[in-house]
Length: 213
Image (tube, rainbow, N blue to C red; front, top):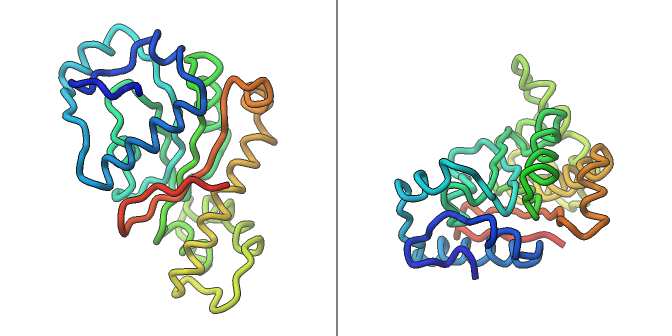
């Protein structure tokens, strides 16, 4: 399975184009398993830099949170040139990120849009608790619909880690729905079978990326 090369070299156009969206998802899952079990590939980043300097052929675009503990490239064991990465607190989809994802798929040829939330998300906790701070206030307002949409019995406050994680998963699903509703480009590519839009949750404890149904 690409890119399981001895030197973990960056993807070529031929390798990327030969993959289906399902194969790209499988590649990401295998990368996370390597990360989780401590068997990551030996990346020659200088070689990857040289190879990719003349062009890039990423297989996926990943929309994830800015949390310093959730670096997608590392926890999915990808190298330079393998994936586009957009990061914003709470992994929301605003106009700029939608445009970036449209470029990644419609222009650059990425096969998968992966929205990745994570456990113990501070942005989600802030939305639950009604935190207010400059421009952050408006950002957290975009997460708030996931609070009411989350079915949960028990303490529905930011002090309850289980509730925070449940809202984070709902927020991932809401972001996927927003991508499909607001981007005719991405929705059309998915309808034609050229890409898949999927969601996941990264578990800070254990390191597993759980793909959501």
